[in-house]
Length: 210
Length: 210
Image 1 (cartoon, each protein chain N blue to C red):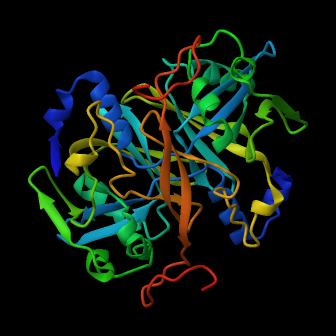
Image 2 (cartoon, chains in turn purple, green):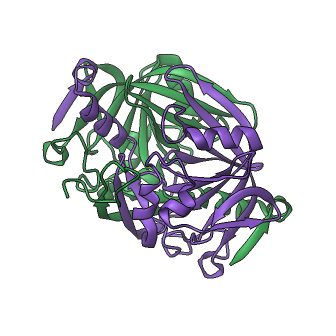
């Protein structure tokens, strides 16, 4: 085992620390966030800090760094009040990663994605994605500790492949080709071990339906 | 494609909606959170809403529902100011899931885990885990939208297998046996596709070191 103390971490070379600390939370979601500016220009950026906040009302959260390539996403989202989340699929993870470059033009064009619009909201979806969520900005919370911003959105619309939606509402994102991310730059496919039933104190873990 | 509108979602049966909305963010981290009460009783609970907040200072976030099995974790964490995160390893994901049952005794004993202590903080680590992080409470933020609580902790200590730490600080959590979670009850192993180098506008995505 290697052990690092707080002072070891404080003394690390900057990029070494960035890689290490970004590894610590475990596997991450990988989503392309679609927005549009007040002038109608689309934007697309990959985010790995997207997470579940609550089911009723249906809320999702996202942490944004204002000083990065994410700045256009944040500005558009605050200007218009809408954004989309599009699961990164195995077939286009390289193009998805490429959206983190500092483009002056729309990443849809620059990285080879097609913008898709519905009547539910003005923000663009990624046509190539299998799982897509449209959201309305519900709350902005500034994290004074390091200048990041927590965006919470309310789900307005969801699109997914019909054969990936199970009878109890579980969406089989592995079957839908969704990948997972590690640290700043790792991309991984998955293989499901099991779904485990609601845990009760007096019985061992068992599989759903088992 | 199946499409659900906001009113479709509002009209769903409760558990169907819980399963679906919990699926939407994508793959999740799976961590066991270790705490100790003011009276010295240990507690262990599985969390899938743990995420990276920042590298300098090293900060990690966690969303907590006060009305669930997570309530002991929250009380201990606020009482003592410390907690640990322990990556769920493939070898013990069933016991880790079982910590979500409403035990009146310590989940360390009830679910077959060993508490491990260091000099850096009073909260217990999971001896069986390969990747372990000790944190001090840095900020509590209440999310009024649905009563959840955002806890941000500052990293005090990190332990990991020496052969999983690469030369640039990337921790190979797949090699360390860390698994990923989906929705409320899915557990998955991973297979890395690639690490992709820092993206620049004028060159296509390439692999780290490539």
